[in-house]
Image (cartoon, rainbow, N blue to C red; front, side, top):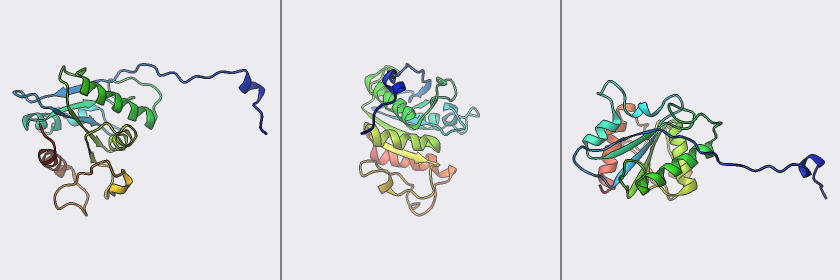
Length: 191
């Protein structure tokens, strides 16, 4: 029988969850209040600006708002204007889960969103998959820049997979993302 070392017997360690700041940008259509929002999670070398590039011609957030959809792009922990704590995949997924709850409760932009679709790019896609599989509180998942071939079995049966029409056997390229995501949302999500 193993016994605890003297050091283990004389120490008491507790994991403490400290508050962290998550910054985000909410973009809404000018003349409507959507019931669904996309929670946008960027890749490892970016920040929330990935979804709203400053040149104005390539803004995913503004394009979605013009098309009638709400988006909320966050700075992941350790990126942009968010807190800079030690990071882990579990912490990143927990943050996404907490933001989902805030979007549903009306704590972001004073609008209670009935549906939240997690959208992740690259590292953000991995975080989105982990959050969806762990907390199961997302209404949909959109992944970009994660892998060339995505097997639904790797995500679990309850996580929907989106690919562009006719692109099942080919990778989605940057030019395909906006149109493919918009087409999927228009066909699958009630506003």
